[in-house]
Image (tube, rainbow, N blue to C red; front, side):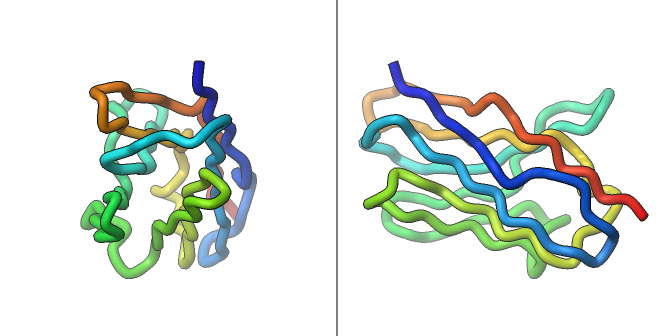
Length: 115
């Protein structure tokens, strides 16, 4: 069983930065790795995704502010979040889509942007 462990969430002021990390307990042959977020009372939405070849995609709301990256040697995907806004407040979830049709989710990490 694969476990995804997330870290890096917390409380930050508007305009600040946070870096989320998600580490898998073992190497996964993946199609893509990504980050989703879910605010209270709202659905879980895709924030950013990075494909096995390295190409990336972002939600319009975070383009130019967030950067997704991966370190295959460490089985880790990162989300660098800059210029944070109160509307970025949510629980952030790591997601990995495996090449064999398997899919994994992290437990979620809270990000709160408030003064």
